[in-house]
Amino acid sequence: MTRVVGRQGRVTGKIGPGLVGEVMVPIRGGVEAFYAYPSIPDEEIPVGSIVIVVEYSPPRTVYVARAVI
Image 1 (cartoon, one colour):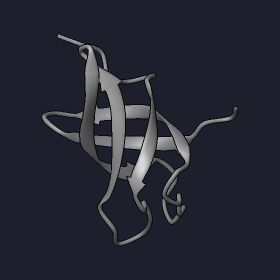
Image 2 (cartoon, rainbow, N blue to C red):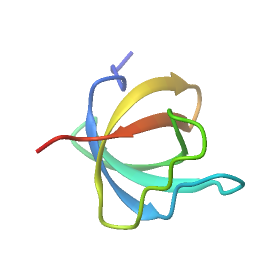
Image 3 (cartoon, rainbow, N blue to C red):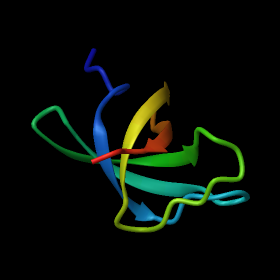
Image 4 (cartoon, rainbow, N blue to C red):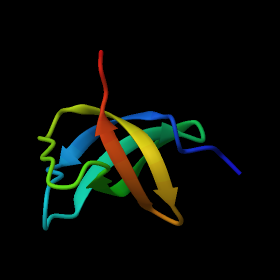
């Protein structure tokens, strides 16, 4: 099984309270879309932001935090 937690991704659908966001994560030799929620409640993460996957809920849901780059 490929590890998802710890990978960086780019937000393609706004993440925030009451929203199901989307992130694209490089994995398995390509890039895949995952439904995304903020790891910190009530945080908003805009489209284009770089994030880190902190929790993975199969098959396609991740919880993310802003990456410090």
